[in-house]
Amino acid sequence: MTDLQSRPTPAAASGGGDSTAARVAPRPRPKRLVRRGVRHAIMIVASIVMIYPLLWMVVSSLRPNDEIFRNPGLFPISLDFSNYARGWESLAQPFSHYLMNSTLLVLGCVIGNLIACSLTAYAFARLKFWGRNIAFAVMLMTLMLPIHVVIVPQYIIFSQTGWVNTMLPLILPKFLATDAFFVFLMVQFIRGIPRELDEAARIDGCGHFRIFFQVILPLMLPALATTTIFTFMWMWNDFFGSLIYLTTPENFTVPLALKSFLDTQGSSDWGAMFAMSVVSLIPLFLVFLFGQRFLVKGFATTGIK
Image 1 (cartoon, rainbow, N blue to C red):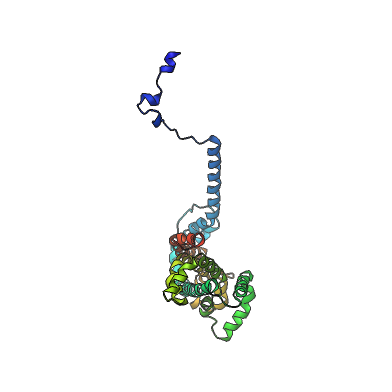
Image 2: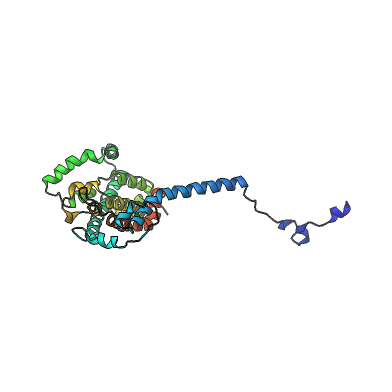
C-alpha cells in the first residue's frame, strides 16, 4: 500500500511538476462524427444536383448535335470542338459583336445606377425636405410592381420619341434611379454612417455635394460594388427588355443572339448554342469571382472601418 502511494506520477517523474500537467484534447464523439458526415454528404449531393445543369451544358457544347439528347450523361462519346468555331460565326454577325453590345449596355446601366441611386439615397438618408417619408414609401412600393405593368406605357413613350431599336430605353431609366432596390440598399448603408462625419465636414465649410463626394461616397464602396455586381448580372442576362426594344439583329445582345440559334420551323444548332452559352457565362463568372468579397461587405458592414 505504501509502495503505491509513494510511486511518483508521470508528470512528476518527467520533472514538470503540478504546473505542467498534460492536457489531452477531447476526442469528438462518434455521434458527432456521424452527424457531421451526414451533413457534409447531404451538402455534397445538393451541390451536385444544383451544378448538374451547368456541367451538362458544358459537356453538351463538346458533343455533336445528334448526340446531345441521345446521351444525357456527363461523359461524351466523342468530342466536337467545332461547335465553338461554328457558333462564333454562324449568325448574321460574329458573336463578338453581340458580346460588345451587351458590354455597352451593361456599362451604361452600371454607370447610371451608381450615379443616380447613390445621389437619391443620399437625399433620402441625409436631407430633410417636405414629403421625404411619403416619397420613400412610394419608391418602396414600386418594388412590388411587376415589370409587365409598366412596360406598355414605357414602350409608348419610347416609341413616340423614336428610341425603339436603340439602347436608350434600356439605359436611360437607370440614370433616373428607377431601381428602387439599389436606392433602398444605399439608404440603409448611409444611415449606418455616423452623422458626426457630416458635422465635422460642415464645420470645415463643406456643402452637401462635398460631403457626399468626399465623405460619404468613399465609405460606400461595398454598397457601390454590390450595385455594380447585381446590375451587371441582371442586365447581362436581360432577355425580356432586349426582346421588347431591340428589333434588328445588329443591335441584339447576348440573350437574343443565343435565341437566334433556335429555329422553330427548321433545324436548331444546339451544339453551337451551348458553346456560345458557355462563352457568355465567362464574364459573369469572373465578375462574381473577383467581386464576391465586396458583395458580402455590402450586406454585412456599415462602411466604417
